[in-house]
Image (cartoon, rainbow, N blue to C red; front, side, top):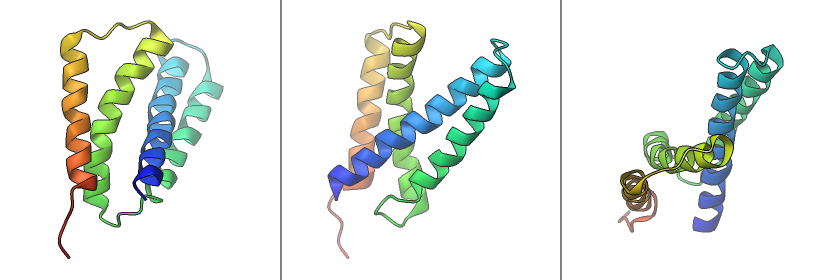
Length: 110
């Protein structure tokens, strides 16, 4: 169950960050409306993927995904745009991922 949840978070990150990046490229970098449209499709698919999380609590899933988004955005920027995160970026992302683990995977009573 945890492995499935992590895989869904990773897929959601690719779709949301990738979708936002495509919209950015289409509008800010003047690559055209096809890029914007592809980004919009990816963003809708992100919303669909998020609903597949095994935890039914929307707030918990979205809060945890926020940490995945932060870490994923830094990775995306490094790969796609040549951004080099510094030690504070990396440390902050790791803190966020610890928060994700606590929010989603901590043992809970009934």
